[in-house]
Amino acid sequence: MRSISTGIQLDAPPEQVWKVFSDFPAYGEWNPFIREAQGTLAVGERLNLRLYPVSGRPMTFKPVVLVAEPGRAVTWKGIVLVPGLFDGTHKFTMEARDGGTYFTQAEDFGGLLTPFLGSTITGTIASFELLNAALKKRVEQ
Image (cartoon, rainbow, N blue to C red; front, side, top):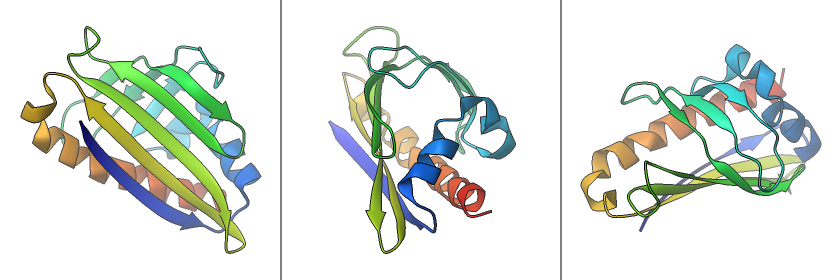
């Protein structure tokens, strides 16, 4: 397994961060990484996401929501083709801190292809950081 993580301090309460983060129809207005998102942030629901990674070409991803706690956390898991080939569990957390919110993204990658996709995984960090900066700008407007 391989893990990556990024975080950013936002000058907004977790409820405001959740409001922006969970508004999928508005993603095209501000989110440079996940430009299209459909579905419901509820446990067991399947989302339809269109990702535009910094390094790589756009792709559609259809993860299942594992955790959906308004103002606190979202976790989804996606697979490539079949379980165990290349799986990703993506976690977003919103922690009240210093009068605002500390927003974290982390992803655990697993599966047979993980050792061969090191540069793809490392490149994903830049995409996470772009999303974080764009979220900060959006919630602090």
